[in-house]
Image (cartoon, rainbow, N blue to C red):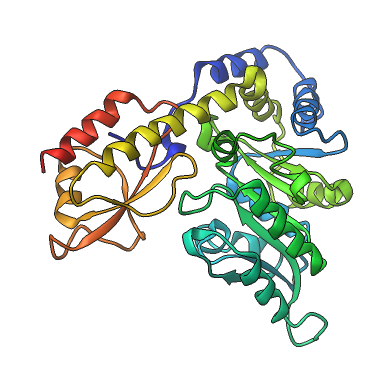
Length: 351
């Protein structure tokens, strides 16, 4: 009953086999190898973006921080939701890699920005005044930190709002594939056709051992990204092992299959939770993440039965009044089983 995070799951055999094949010979380093070139072409084809530049890093924090830094000078400001990963969970990495840019949090229900809230924040930003940081970038997250999902129309409207203020848009896609599968649109419709300039395409949360792609639909910033990646220590010499993972992940639509399974398991879990007494699902499920209110005593019992998941927000505790509702965050993965879902719901039903 492991629902702590999808990035703690194992790795599909197809990915391990691809790594073994990549291990068979000497090739050029730093991404100048046939596997990286094949991956670049594959992503360009999937996103219908023949001029897009594709760069690989090993972590989501590096993907986000380096992408943001490529668009944001030290005196710039990045506008994002107040719960965005770049604001609350990356230990100041975007500020560090941009040499001091400011994160400006914007509120919104369910971790989603609205065009109105974004427009108001940008109107107050003080562009052109030497005493204020200058608006430089808008960063969106899909799936959001509350597991909700932006629709194509919502993304398009938010990107248009950013563009009206002269700003490019970054999309944190750590769980992009989960959102994409649920939305049922093309990768192009969900990114650059909606107005996204740069995408952090997450693979680690959807089965990969450890690789994220930064897809720059606007290649004008590509050279700066390369320099920042090297200077920041995130250019791997044996880059083919990153590319081999992601290329195998994309072949035969494996990435979509893995995400669809995780989403299906989350739907099964959600259906069961809605039938449980004292359980309240908090947000509309956009993919493979659920947030549910339960009495603190129920969380204690579930953890005692072996269920592993985090309370939310992260400062919540199992200690305290037993009847008080406390939220838990449940995340399914590509290898979550029906039996694990049934075991969890059975344990909850016995409480």
